[in-house]
Length: 322
Ligand SMILES: Nc1nc2c(c(=O)[nH]1)N[C@H]1C(S)=C(S)[C@@H](COP(=O)(O)O)O[C@H]1N2
Ligand SMILES: [Mo]
Figure 1 (cartoon, helix red, strand yellow):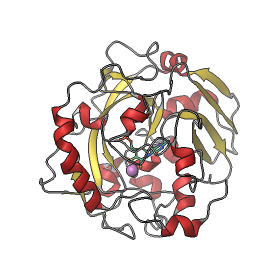
Figure 2 (tube, rainbow, N blue to C red):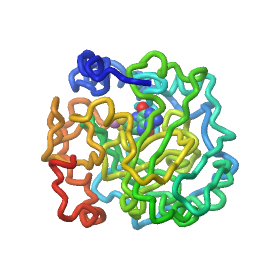
Figure 3 (cartoon, rainbow, N blue to C red):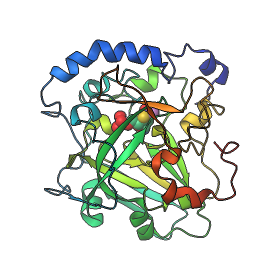
Figure 4 (cartoon, protein in one colour):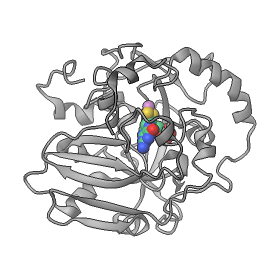
């Protein structure tokens, strides 16, 4: 699908992505009461790979967040961005659980690899082994959470498929089923399916994770069941949900957000408080799960993961390659 960039640009902010902090705050205040009064949101909801999910994943203590508390489960699973369903963060969990089945689910890994792979996500879970890691999560819209994810490092899967020397990038693709998700038609100015990309060294970084669970349970549909990418030092939109394909490519892949707004959403999109989004500052962030009146907190360079990732970008102009 060809997108008309002008049209995307000229949409009112509330209709395209991001969030206008003002609108978000109003919704937040209006709905916070409902959410916090709710009981366990997870009950009866569809979720991803259950048969391949361990009883209790072990926490990998090398990947924890020491200075912040994990965001409550009800917020992680109740405040979502998943435009295939809706742009309303509080309605995703309802729409994504109506008719959409995420088990069984086939994932295809191909492109420039010696050993392409097509398999069920439950089998993949059993082969890879599942551990828990707690990561900071920072959306480009300047809000954040701390999420206990369950899954495995992407590097483990990369080793298995053996990329060839031509593999310079990794392209990720989300499902596209217009029958179960209304967003494809409603927001037809986006270049569906949702795609994302990483450079191969970014994909191989020890932090880059494929998540199949949240808080020690199979990942609910609204969070990207049954398998989604998590790249904690980049803005949240890089963490693409509900993967059906992972392809190793020679050229930098086209991605949905970069195509929609190349000046607003760079291919790299590393969290950087010093580079403002054209329409808002990235210096601070709103902590989800806290009162709307709580003070914002400072945003950290590479979302606090500078030590683990700075070497990847040595010598690169991070303003130019935002
Ligand atoms: N396929 C797909 N992946 C996606 C999105 C989306 O709309 N579709 N939204 C992105 C954005 S903007 C964010 S902030 C995170 C939100 O993840 P969460 O709902 O689990 O918090 O998912 C990212 N991955
Ligand atoms: Mo986001």
